[in-house]
Image 1 (cartoon, one colour):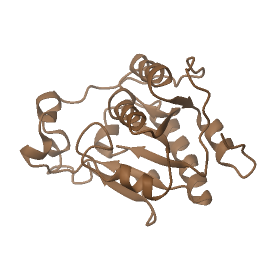
Image 2: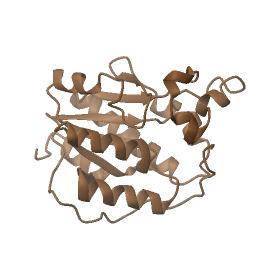
Image 3: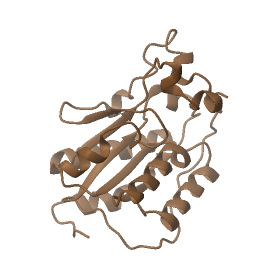
Image 4: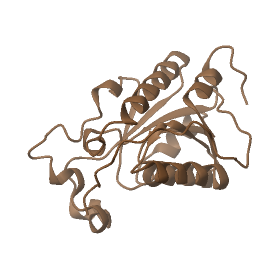
Amino acid sequence: MSLPSIQAYDLPTELPAGRVDWRPDPNRAALLVHDMQRYFLAPYAGAPIPQVTANIQALLTACRERGIPVFYTAQPGRQAAEDRGLLTEFWGAGIGAVIDTDPQAEDIVPALAPEPADTVLTKWRYSAFQRSDLAERLAAAGRDHLVITGVYAHIGCQTTAVEAFMRDVAPFMVSDAVADFSRERHDQACEYVAQRCGALTTTAAALEAFSPVGVAS
């Protein structure tokens, strides 16, 4: 029930076809850094995590410079059984299994550490919207584009994208700023989002859209 060992793989360089031609608008967008905690990155043997981390760093810098809201999700290290619910059936105790021996397991990796103006949401289920006030915060900020980065692409990132779509928030999965159990799972998540609930973008394209000379969608 624990996380698998994840072998190194290359990030995709071509995006699957999409059903919509959306671009993230800096005046409507918020950035989500999903579950980039030490526990969830520990299974990786290397690539693509260094590149994904660097890409998320670049997006964080751009968003903070433009005043684009930044959200993080982070699962708590210790969870009551009723809070963890059915996750235990699939994944065991999660961070709770190692938190006593590795107190930093729940920390967001230092390279992506939140800043005071950022919002860190407690993560209880796959979707960042579940048992959080993410939807209300987005609405209050006038934001209906959600740019999604982090791990794991086919689990929490994809589920968050689906729920965003169902809440009329346009999701953008950044194909080279997410990582997964394998390249196959990574590609499956990208294709699903592109065909069912949102749009794919790359770090370079998102940075262009967020730049002062970027053309809003």
